[in-house]
Image (tube, rainbow over all chains, first blue to last red; front, side, top):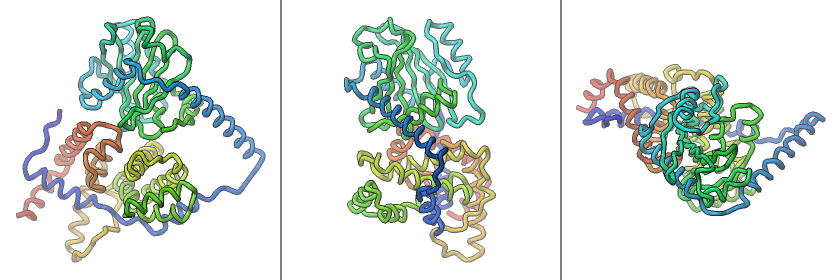
Amino acid sequence: MHEPLTGEWRSRLEQNLAAHLGMVRAPDSLWERVEAALEPRETTSVRGSAWRLAACLAVAAAAAAIWFAHRRPESPSTLEAAAMRVHQEFLGHPERLDLRTQSAAELRNWLGENSSLTAAVALARPQPDPDALELVGARWISFQGQRVAAIAYRVGVFPATLLIARARDLEPRQRESLTRKHIVVRNVEGTAWKLFSWETHGQVYALVSSLPDQSQRACVLCHVEPERRQMILRMKFSG
Amino acid sequence: MVAAESEREVVEACRRGDRDAFRALFVAHKDRVYSIALRFSGDEATAMDITQDTFVKLFACMAEFRGEAKFESWLYRLVVNCCLDHRRKARRLVPLAESEIRRPFLSAENPAAQAERSETSRRVQAAVARLSPDLRLAIVLRYTEGLSYEEMAEVFGVSKGTVASRLSRAHKNLARRLSHLAKDWEMKDA
């Protein structure tokens, strides 16, 4: 924990920060730049049309994914609720981790040594990393008497928490909303968070993302391949 | 500032694609967006780029704004994201210290006082420039925009405790870097 600064020095520092970091007037030329950037491009070409068709197909694919993701409005499962609780704890007490590491390899080893869970956290990230992903660590939580792993990380400045549980350890009721092969996406009431949950290869995942824009970018913990990443970023969710 | 009621109307008109309404929204918020961008990047050209990107993005996704959050909070999130995007694209930013901020809002000081103020500003901004992006954004939103902990928590999507922790770390860092100015500030206060 960081002790707060005390006394007059803190007060003077704050006064001077306010005095020297105040608002400035934007240059008058800004509107012309914005307006120019808003103008539609008028050049067309066969290649442009092909790109447009490809874009339309991508949008259609994304729309289909959204339809799949939103067609079931059930309330969050208790595993999802646990993910939100752990995420909240991570925000307030980032020091409460069983493993502090920025290394994906170390995290994978730790999981393997202490459980039969696996995490496909990318071992190598692009340099420079366009998502500025930073692994923070992991902890165990007890869920229905089973050990569930919670991985804490940040995408830029925004925290994200990923819970991983063994599917066969969960009660059927917990798995009910996750037995299909698609991702369930929920808005977390009263927050800007998004909650993603899915099941694959015998493991159930619940991911809470604090990213206010393109919350699905939290998926880049594992998906670093450019095409996959682009596909993920193109997905849009309402709410 | 645009009054709340008329801002709602302006936002609604923007959602219908009304370019004049968007101009009004731009005029109402351009200084705050540019200020955040400039204080974050420390470079006027980068700040122009970030501001442009923010408004272009704002226009493009205006339809997604559903009025559930405050418009300003939504706008702040866009600026914050654009700042971070630019930082990722530019491998190195021009340090704030190399950029002189030439347009203070209020300037009624004599030339000597202005020069002294400018030097202090340069040092403060250089210290801010050396903070990590998340701490720097917290400082900028707090002291450039005057956001409360609660508002910052909403913009960053974190708890108030996290905001407090970031500001505390940033203050300690800045206090260490600016300790050489402590005497000057003390004398001015005396």
